[in-house]
Image 1 (cartoon, rainbow, N blue to C red):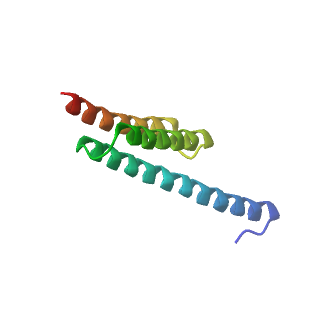
Image 2: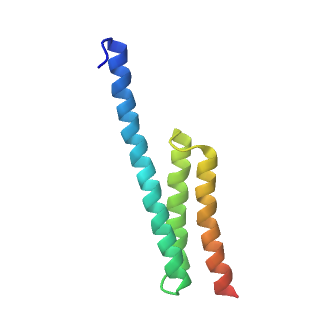
Amino acid sequence: MANKKSAIKRIKIAERNRIRNKNYKSSVRTLMKKCFQAVESFGAGKEKQDSVDESLAQAYSKIDKAVKKGVLHANTGARKKSRLARALNKVSSSASA
């Protein structure tokens, strides 16, 4: 255990930030899964385009906030958003063809 006051404070801050980062990452993963499920059901004809767009917007927003807070690296955020867009485009192109 740390002896100095500043070291004890740094431990508390690091733990607080770890929990905050964990929550952000968890919610990003959850929203991505929901978005993929919405895209999948949209491809099967069970869901409307509006609900897919809404879930995509929520996922994009959370990813952008995580990048802005420094929880995710910018390239990681871009990669995750690209995966979501690619999944939607794949289903949209096959549905329109």
